[in-house]
Length: 308
Image (cartoon, rainbow, N blue to C red; front, side, top):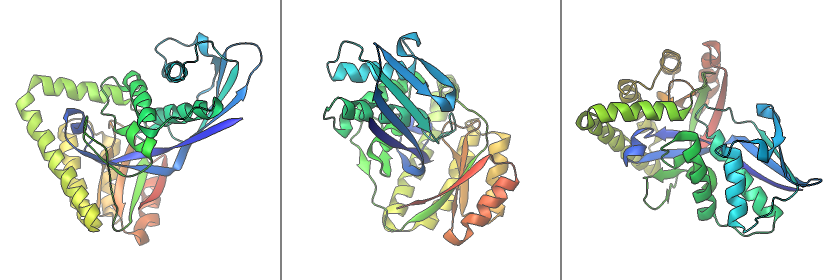
């Protein structure tokens, strides 16, 4: 049996604007992960077993545009394997789907690495990242590439589309509480809606994207200088801009208010919006209090993660 694992991820700053060339900050979330196991099958063909999404099927039965089929076929092509081997690929994940934690990219990265291990193929992080990004286009239409990058490298990342990857050095660890609204919110839809807004008034929205880019740059400086508390006000400002962009929701707005009134330094939605997750910057000693308040106010689940 060959295995591989990939973590989740959360965007701290820059979602949506990152699609338009502005910087974004994102970090891995190791408390949730996708695990892939590959075993030799019988007969011919590849069988997919993904109990989390109630999927048991032959690969050939999936649509040619299905992300699972795409990542497996692209990876086999990379290894110059033309005949369909007899395999069972089992996918287990604790990452919620369509919640902004990078579930799709984590599945892709884990499958690529498990297949590489199974066939004894060497594959570097850059190639894993590119393959995963190709599949992200199926999930999200016009993705920034930040999900696959953070998950592939499993490090905090300062990301600008089509520019060299910059990993972040965190001078002082800081604590984030992630709260899931429980509302499925496919990124493709919110990205598409923001694209329509931009097309209707490019000048206005370019200025908004500029402001978000400035926030991301200031946050990078704060992280590198160990001044993590400065990110609280930056989160609040970023959230206001995301609301203006129509990608927040009443449920997200409620959780932001609850986090702030419970003692968070700052809070905002994370990811595509319209549902999914909210994040709050907290002092370590306040993390449990804030997490409990969020659960008590309707959050489906919470994750406390330390970025370091």
